Image (cartoon, rainbow, N blue to C red; front, side, top):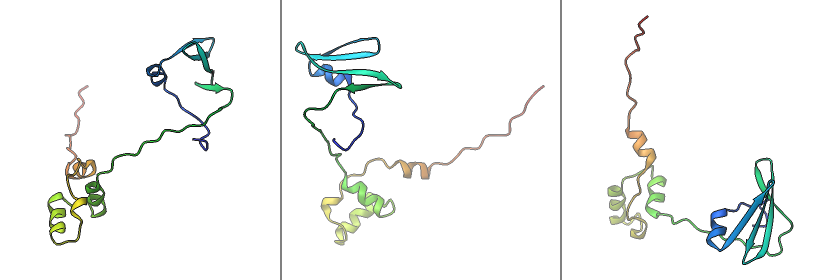
Length: 123
């Protein structure tokens, strides 16, 4: 993405795409089919690209959002059973109510902290 000031790259992804790399003296050079792709130089714990970007590309992904989870949080962590009641009385759309993922907040809320007896130290 052009507005991001740093780019991250995974060596494994490059290898999956047929790239190889050679490194020595804190410089790594990446090749694909005997063509030199780019060089990275080690500085402050990271390898930085050396050179300029000729063609900017960005690959993005969109997370799958469960609409039931959204409603669950919007309605103060309402249960799926109660959401189905709201569907029957037409307050919610049936497309928005399917299955809830595990709600970590609810699990923690229902759990309790077990107290431990006072420690006895023997001298």
